[in-house]
Length: 337
Image (cartoon, rainbow, N blue to C red; front, side):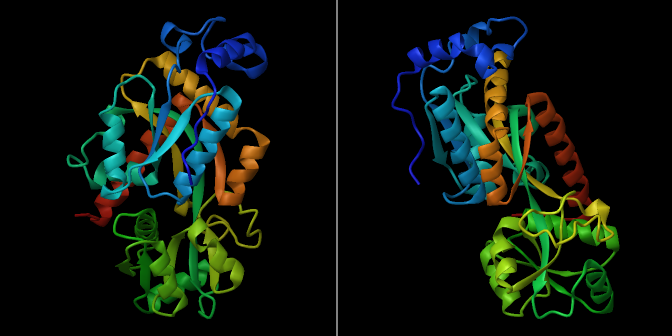
């Protein structure tokens, strides 16, 4: 997919936006009618939206949808760039070293919240010190899945099976959200499953369908098509509400495990030290687009739960996730190389 960009001149569009601030909702970015000095002249050049994952993945698709919406609505020239590798740390470190001017964005996920512990002191950046939260976009569920031919048909069945014999549980890799969800499940139940890490979600799901694994606490979008095709059986989703795509699949709370709520967040961060009026301007614009009915519907179809959060709300949420997963990772003794 080609990067999103605008061919329009930014300055005339900015003047039009300021004239229409009341209708567009931009006039309320800061107290008073005028924006701060830094935000008033922003943007005057293209914005680089760094996605620290390969093209075509869920985070990449969501970032491109947001970039296009901002380009269409505000005339901002938002260009998505993929900088994958290093367990998503390479792209994050790049943004952490960028100029604090609002022109380099980072797409983050639950991976970064857990990396704050897994790669502490060796990630090349400090998530909560070197970067600043701008906007929360959405979250995707995890889904507990087994082979469709398995005798395990519920979370209660899974608990009984895990107590009766060692179960093989696959994941998309050591320290990934599926592995962390498995670790949380084990800490809540006391059940000890054999963790088998794979290099990605697809090969682990292939082995689950082939009968070589017993269960996966999978990324929802990765396993959704297999559940719909009948190759896999979903036991529960790890969100507070049922998925519109799978209305018959219970939540973990309905299945008797309310503490197993896990939502793979995605949002936007900037280099720490970026002027607050620019942070607020970008955050408000992003939240406004995520709140649009068409964007919400598009994200739901991708397997996301829209969760637009302003900078302050996203900061609180992210800090909570870092703290939560630090405790789980330390207690489970999870390490990565």
